[in-house]
Picture 1: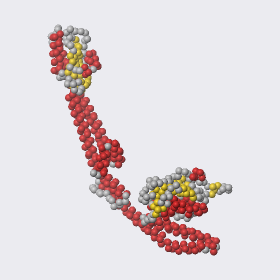
Picture 2 (picture 1 turned 180 degrees about the vertical axis):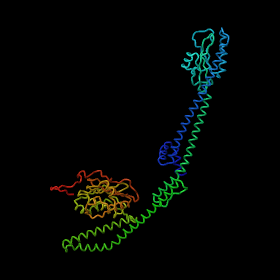
Picture 3 (picture 1 turned 90 degrees about the vertical axis):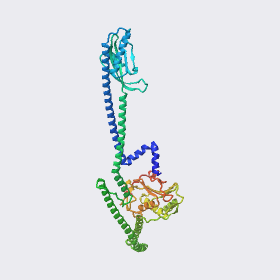
Picture 4 (picture 1 turned 30 degrees about the vertical axis):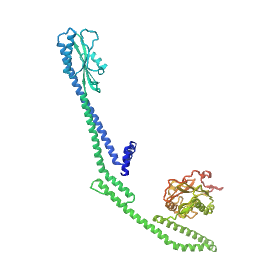
Length: 551
């Protein structure tokens, strides 16, 4: 069994997963969402129609049955009263009892019900008055109904009540009709006739059941039709979504199948035309990028030979500048410095072109990053001292060897420390080395002017400078941080930056212990917990006695 089918079957067996599954389908499937809304709206409309129809049928059945029983009861009372009025006057109890029995038989025959009860209204004792008779349970005759029948001689009263039949089954709906009947020599009797509505109730339940079954079937039919119609409409959209995803992933040859001449076919043709245009432009850009890469690499390579000659000549002139006059010696010194910077720029350009071409290879060897950081810091102490900065190393970890390319890591550190010296405003620079089970990190923290969040986002861009007017004192080319980021990514690591204006900057290089393994967190957070700048004070221009500001 496929894994997806097994997972779906297990999810169906667990009700706790239904709501999350429905929520996921709601947010991810247009077809499910549209079908759900259609079915819900249709189900609500059908439910309202069924309820309204059931109520209308219920009212109609009840009204017609009520009118029928009231008419039958009235006719029965009239016929029974005629029997009592036309009979000879009974003077003894037996005769009067027989007369009332005859009237009762006529009443039940005309009224169409055997459920009858009568009670003598006058509470005075009579020797010949027939006794009360009841085939209706006492609970069916309410106090209100009996009170109205007792006080109204010629008015017919009725009430809908549940009534227990003689077989002891569940109470059924019924109508009880009450009216007075005048019996000679015994005064008035209150007479009640009960009519069962079981047949009407059974008919109503059948109609309601039929309506609800029909409604459920209609909802299922609408859901099925909606699902198939939406599947027909949504399938091209799904294909377009999948095709656009493949196109975004780099598969430039993918296209939508076009069928027919409708709106969806127009969409497919437009999408394919857009894909053709994108493929053409990307191909042109890729070719142009390759041309640019080859151009940069070829130019950099071709310039090396004349640059080597120029460098040798500049070194010769620089070595003998003491023999020249002051202006010529200064020119020779500047020539030597700029040729060295030009050579470094060519080296960086060649390195960038290798990254763009994807031809950079790492030469890994076991290296202690703590020791490497100490070596780099030691080699740059003199430069830092010239700028008034002190290099401090804090290394709670990072001593165990990890597989890295030491030349590239050394280049990253030299670049980060050089930038810290350049922008550190003569304040201490803290180099932190730490590690955990998965990664090793090196942080370089200066307490100089710092950068705004916008500048920090662009700090790794090529040839970008936060302050273009600021003079470089270490001869950077503007490509150092870009190359450093490339070296970090080549190791499978990361290079993060934190900076605040007036608080300085903190660059953190994180490298995984195992090549190819990505660490989700760094042993050294980019935002420092202890801000040394709080003790040193926010970087501000220094005021001299004459009031002039010095950086």
